[in-house]
Image (tube, rainbow, N blue to C red; front, side):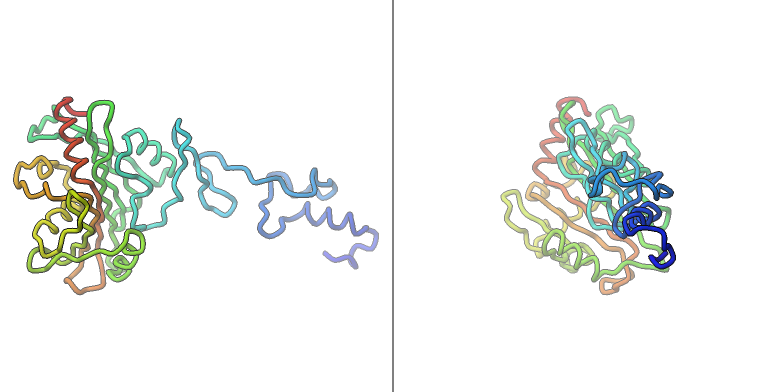
Length: 291
């Protein structure tokens, strides 16, 4: 449309018609706006954008931040695929908080709950909650394990472990994972191959917060507790080895590759826990009969 093509239309009417028939760049059309060319806008400036209802995306397809519980907390930014984080879940969160957070992330995230025995009782008569959160299809699925412990009514997340799988035709990159993990969490140290598998990386502190050397066998032991995908707490309960008492706050990751030098990755698992808090929570659970 041009002014020359509409000789009988004033400039003001032309502008109103043009605005009613289409959207200006970066401004979302409201329902029913098209076709109202003959009506003047209610205000000179567009109204402030309002938050979309839970579960709906904004105009550009990016999910909006939504409240997740009665404490008026907000959803974290919508997770990018294969992001090296824990989807907003943090140590110390209650089962209710984690459930609300997963709900607000939308239907792409599936939550499965179960109970994990604290001891060797296969009937789980003394057990605590365990959450498995997944996204994606088989072969390139992401999964987050959340282990809880604590006294009844005071359960909290004490260990997080997330695994990302890559399809064979599109493997992950070791260098990419190393760079991104260091960018998010700080520098990592690889385990000494003379002591343990060199595809394990860790930030391992002792109970006083001092870093543990990768030459110390405890470094690998503490690091593997974070990335162990098993649900058992036996190691934390000192049923096999008392050495973990030296562990403090740990974050680590383990990559699955054809060799210690291959850049192509099939899988990465990252995890975190605080040994002192985990053991304290487990003792609370045992004293209280589980969660």
